[in-house]
Length: 170
Ligand code: NI
Image (cartoon, rainbow, N blue to C red):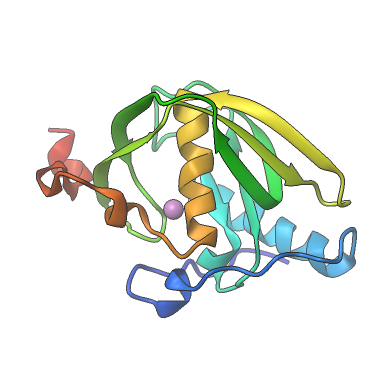
């Protein structure tokens, strides 16, 4: 249990598709999820995916009441997704700034679906789904991209909108 090292862009493990989880409710799964929460909270992140701590598994955690990295964001319930699936509910997209704990210090503007339904298993293997919009939908799409080996800079269409957070915010 505890805080794990977060891999940074350039590490090939961040580009590897993650494997489906087949065993639920196990002590090992609980420990991995506990480590993800510890590591995410320690880094003040909005979300974290298992590949970011070097585990090629389809597990993400996300959510916060307040987040210093995204001070204007509405709260998102703390959620664990295992083997998630995302379905866009319409053709609307929006562009907004994203960061990533694996790409420290940088921000980029990325287009995402505005409204999605996500379906996943919980820690005990029970399926659930939710509809999400805007920043909540963005966080889920960003985290689930990690499970496909996709990092947000790969989705930036205008590279003029990619840079260091400290410079962009000035
Ligand atoms: Ni990320």
